[in-house]
Each structure stands twice: as structure tokens, then as C-alpha cells.
Length: 221
View 1 (cartoon, rainbow, N blue to C red):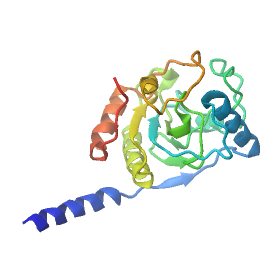
View 2: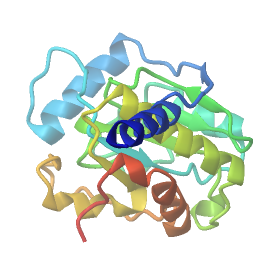
View 3: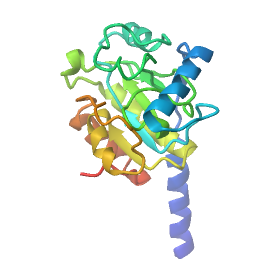
View 4: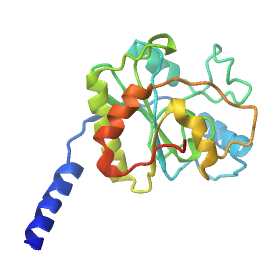
């Protein structure tokens, strides 16, 4: 009887880990200039002098773009230099914001850069965080992410946890400041903070419910 229970548990684990996922590579501009700017960001904000920008992923951060157009969302992340309208964060660095993945409204998942290279997407946590952007969140207010995006985020979280067993946390961008209480928080500039609302409590609750067997931690309360 015990052997039979263990066998069925094994079958469940296989079906969980083998779930198919389709990812399309759509690289943003990430040449030597952006790499060097990323190294400078790491030194300035985290106090680490690094030879490369490889990270050990320990957090997945879900976002929305606050823009309803996929093309506009992509082209905001694509350049190496920060766009001129980002006055809220320009003083911290001219390095453009980025993310590892961008999920379209129809659920299509695009990989923008290697998911073990550092992207600038979340204050204090970039050095251990994989960022997933979702097209939507109109005017940074609307809780409008689609069912297709929800399914894709669930599949992507499962895929990333399987690829990187080191991942411990799953957070929404709006929860990032709660991570200041953890050892993963590295930001040295106490005045460098922003207020975020993405991707919303409803979306995070739905993703967390679906990936509960992964035992990923939420940020401290």
C-alpha cells in the first residue's frame, strides 16, 4: 500500500514538473554598454564589485507595464539608456529598466534577456530577482490583466522554480518594500524608493493559489 501511494505521488510530481510552456525569444538591446552600466549600478546601489552580471535567482517579481500596447511596452524596455520621462528614477542611474520576460495580453510569453543576468526592475532586489512584466494595468491603476496572462504567469513560475531550485520567494512589485526585512534586500540608498501598485492583490492571490505546491514564500508582513 505504501509503495502504491509513493508511486502515485511520483506520477503527480512528474505531471507537475513536465507542464509544457512556450517561450519566444525577443531580445532587448543588451550590449557591452548596458552590461557596464549594470555593473556600475550593482556597485553604486549594492556595494558589490562584480566581474559579470550573473545572478543567483531567489525571487520572482510579477509586474504590469501600465501600458496596453505590447509594442510600446517592449520598446520602453528595449533601449540601453533610460527614457527621458522616467524622472522618478533617473537620479539613481541612467541604466534603462528591463525585465527578463514580457507576457502579452493573449498570454504569449517573450524572453527579453537571459534570466540569470541582472535586470533593473525592482529597487533593492535586482541582484537576486527575475522580473516578469505583463502588458496591462492601464494608467497604472486598472486591475485588468487577462485570464490568459494569469495562466501564462502560473506556467512561467512553475518553469522558473524547476529551472532554478534556489528561488524562494514569489512577490508582486507592489510588495517589494516588505522585502526590506530580509537578507536579500541590498539597496544602500535609503532615499531611493517608489510607490508601486502592480500587478495587484487579486492577480497575486490567483497565481499563489495555483502554485501553492511549490511552497514559495510571500514577503514578510
